[in-house]
Image 1 (cartoon, rainbow, N blue to C red):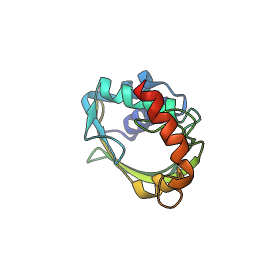
Image 2: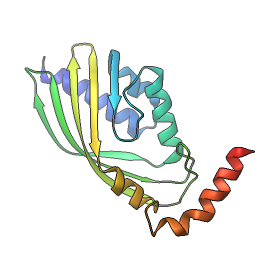
Image 3: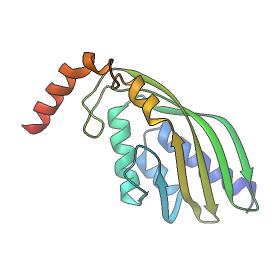
Length: 157
């Protein structure tokens, strides 16, 4: 597999995230391609990926990813990427109402490719750090309780 193929698909994937365009993200995947990380409930594919991108960009309207380092194994069709995610939690994200907190989260993706696109992304990051930055760990969560309660009440209505 040529390096330009890896660069094309991965570049499209990051561009889709940074432009908040789920369609562009999905276009980077081969049929049946999957993504999983600590924030997903198992491996996602197809429309599930689109919905996940939509949910994430709704919860973090300013989300963006910066690539810190990439290492490609072209013969094996793999790419290893160190990234940093930036965003502010100003919208709903899953069951969480907005906390108003900003995140700067580092992670690693292990990505496999075929000539048709990304076949899998396995993402790794520290979910405890993510929750801490959102103010959702003890004792910080005490300050978030009123927002969480109001958000839960609104969702119940």
